[in-house]
Image 1 (cartoon, one colour):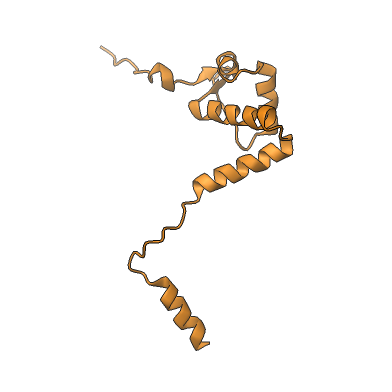
Image 2 (image 1 turned 180 degrees about the vertical axis):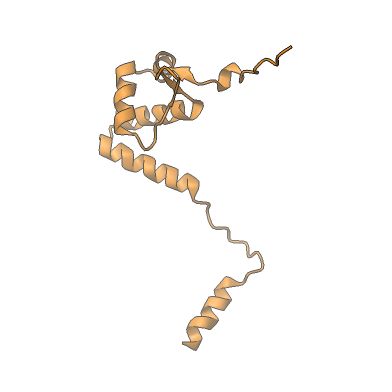
Length: 115
């Protein structure tokens, strides 16, 4: 007996553009336009037939784009900058104040004092 493919839970499966449109609250043509304008942030997976499928991360980005454009009244360029800053802030860990035994500040001071 061949093994059956297990599917991801419904909440984790990518959704078609019609569902994404409903979830975000904008028309499908708006999502397609945003996909072109915000290509660095939006990249839905495609089926073999070329249909777009939006993952949870894509839906979150769409909701953020909608918030920036519709509520905050950003321009497209301003929304791109805001998204870049937000993603950069999430990707860059904040430096901790705890010293993990490296004593870098003292070593840097010593090196600069000798020169």
